[in-house]
Amino acid sequence: MSSTERDSHWPHITELLVRSGGQIMLGYVAPIEGAAVATAEQTLFAALVRREGESVNALLQRLDEAIGAAFHQGVLTNEIKGGNLRLAPARTRKKR
Image (tube, rainbow, N blue to C red; front, side, top):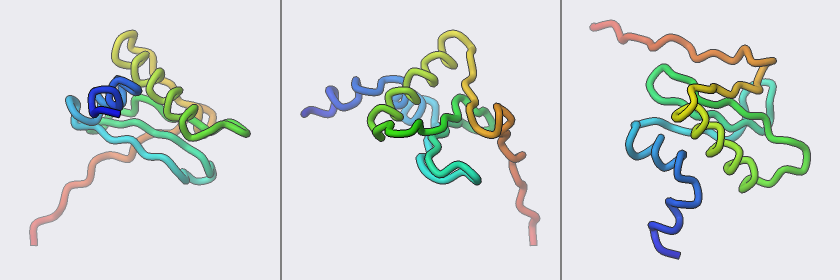
C-alpha cells in the first residue's frame, strides 16, 4: 500500500496532523478506557468514546468523520463526560 493510499484512508486525520499541526490520542481519558481525541493548539475538534465491540479501525473512521465535520461544518463532537470534556489552558513556563 502506497503512502498516498494510506493517507486517503483517513483524510481528515491526515489534514489535522500534517497541515494543521494537530494531534490525536487514542486510549485512556479518565474514566473512559477507550477514547479518541483530536486537538490542534487549544481547540478540541472531537472526543469520542469507543463503543462496545467497536474495532480500532472503526473508531478511527468515526474520528476521521468527526474531524471532517468540525473542519467543514463547524460541528464539534464531544461524547466524553456528557459533552463536558474541556482542554486545560495552555501553561506558561516561569523563567528561572
